[in-house]
Every structure is written in C-alpha cells, then in structure tokens.
Image (tube, rainbow over all chains, first blue to last red; front, side, top):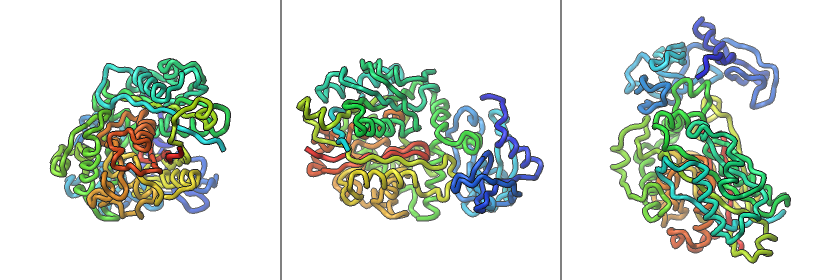
Length: 127
Length: 388
C-alpha cells in the first residue's frame, strides 16, 4: 500500500484527531464526507464545511472473523455504520464487548490504529 | 430495433482450478459457445470480456485482446470491469452493439481466476469492490459489507439467520445435478447454522465461494441467425443497468438496492414485460441476503417481504417463481468476472430445454438474470425470452 496521502480522507482524519471533525453541506442541506466537488444527489457545487457531531448512533454492525491481510491480526473486530447528524460514517467499534454492540447504541467518534499495520482507522466508542 | 439472439453458450465447470489461467478458462468457454452455436469464430466482429481482479491474481491487465486471442478471434476486444457485474455488463454491451447494427455477431462473457491466491489475498481483492477510503480502510470485507446490510435488514424488517439458511439450502439443492456447479452437494439448515462464522450473521454457507471459471455467449442479429439457418430460439429482449453510491453509508437505505431497481425497470420496459411475466430467474446471491434484496428490487416482492420466500418454498424449484435453478453463485460458484455470462448460459439452457433442471420450468417463456457488482453499486438485468 502506498504511503501517499489521500487528501480529502486524511485531512478529515487529521481534523477528527484534533477534535474538529467536519462534513460537507450542499445548498440542498445534504451532508457528505469529503472529497466531493459536487453534491452527488443534486449536482449542487457549493459545498461548505460544517462541524460534524462527535456523538452518533449505530445503524448496523458486523463482527468480522475473516479479514484481508491489512487486518489479519485484528480479528475478530467489529465494523459498524453509524449516523452522525447528516452523514453516516463507517468505522470500528471499540471499548465494549462485541456481544454488547447493537443497533441504536450511542457512540463517540475518534481515530485509532489497526493492529496489523498501524494504519489509522475511524473508531467508535460507547458515548 | 434489431433483435438479439443467443446463438450459443458455453461455460467451464466452476470450482477450484488454480493452475488454469483466466485466458485459458475463457478460451474453453468460448470454444463451447462456438460449438453450441455451430458458427465459425471468424464471424465475430467484436468481443466484450468481463473480468474484475486479474491484476491482483495474475498480474494481468489489458485482458480484452488477450481474451479474444484465447478464443481464437481477431476482432476489436474490450475488457469490461464492473466488479462482480463485469460480464453482465459485457453481455449488455454486446446486446447494444448488435442492436445498433454495427455488428451481427459478438462474443461476450468473462473469466476469473481466484483460487491461486490465499484466502486473505482473495478477500482483499474482492474488498476492492467497496469504497477504498471510507470502507476498506476501516476493515470492511466483502462479506462484511453484505453482513452490514443483513443486520440492518433484520432490524428494519425482521427475519434472521434461519431464513437466510433456507436460501443456501435451496440453491445447494438446485446444484446437485448440475455438472458445472462447484458444490453438487445438498445441505440442510443445521449445516448452515452450525458452520464457522465468517462475519456475523454469516456463516461459511451464507457466502459464495472463491471460484475459478469462464463463461461465454455468442450473440447474433436476427438476420445473421436467419442467414445462417441457426436454431437460436432464445433472445435477449431487454437489458438495463443501474449504478449507486459505492459506500453503504452514503446511501439513503442499506436495505434497498436502487441500482437493481433501476436496471430492472429499464430491462422490463425494454422487453415489454413486468415482474409477473417472469417464469424463472437467476439472481446474484453472492451472499444469502443478496438473493432476498434482489427479489425485492426486481419487483417480485415488496420491500421487506422476501426474507421468507425460500423458507416458504416460493422460490424453490417447484415453487411459484423458481430462483437460481443453476445453484446460483452460492452453489454453482462465483468466479466474479464470469458470473453474469454464466447466468446467461444457464438461463438460455433452461429456456431451451437442455439444462438439467429444465423439466422444472418446461413451459417457461420469460427468464431474468440479475448480476450485481459490489454491494450493488452496479447492477445489470437482462430479460431472455423464447421467441422461436
């Protein structure tokens, strides 16, 4: 895997680590994660940075037992999609027993590292 | 608009053939298609070849001309890549080429070599069908992505692992006598529920396997079929394609597949049929929940109501709408770049009456194939009809 930055993504993680996560809001009110030049739903070109709530709600999750090489030493781990205001974010649930993870769980948003490669991952923890 | 006949189809057996290259697999499938059609390969004017991950498994890109070469065809050739919908899209490109009148004979299909790499490497290769930044970097695997959809489906609509198990049991039962299928072995619900967990709620039997295989079809115009005296009773009368946002989190719903809904709507309108006219369907059951989502997107069931279709026997071989009589991806196998073409091969045989399960649908006139890429960020639906 290349060490090159993916600006929109890495900038978001930098902001998240600094406690200042953001999303992009279009004139229609839709929210999106970067990088976006346009609102894909409407084609609107004016996307403004807005503060992203740091507390959200798990919409769905799965416990992964079989992973690719980048996460081979991390298994089992929990991946979830959680709703933070106008955007949904995919990340890993930590700080709680896997059996206790459920839809509707309130979680906070942060950044962690994966065990296999030490790469940054988005992390949800019980709010 | 020019009609498009399926002059011939061919498939390799699907399974574990790690020593066979994708080009070799496609060459065999193409030879079978030419033999089936009784048409010389020199008639082919264009090739559309579906393949997803040969850069990962074979260090091979640019496989359009390579596949044509393997098929013994000297004609313009293009690789079509839409993840697991690659050869469904290749078929669609071929249909449109014949309809446009710019070609009378087009070779379509695809191939994939997957079992020559380790399971983790294959898992990583398949995960590339998801969003590299917002999903893969978070540890989302391909089964994991569909598990996210399944658990959300259960939350919104009910149902559970046992309902999904019936999908796997049904499709394995259909594959028992299919010599081309990877798993010609019946299983029961307990087998599915007791299998090792891949990612909750999926056990091993909820997931289609890593597979090697090739598929091909020779599509010709009505005039070509007439001029060459071909017995080609099956036509592709409708085709549609849809796209959606890659990341599940960016979608309005994780329990609907609008790319499939749009593909189906287009294909139905194109063919002049509706869901009630379909006699038999081959749908993209890469995971058990995928068949449920497909049945709803295709209009056979309302949203949230297909979860118990297999449990109730409605989609069984003797049910009201037989689904995946080939065994589906689940039991026939899923060499991803070959899958959409294989659906055309199996459906053509089912409608012609020379498939091992044709007797179950002896009066069938309208068949539908549904081929999805990723978590249905791509979908191609084709309608096949008996016209002669």
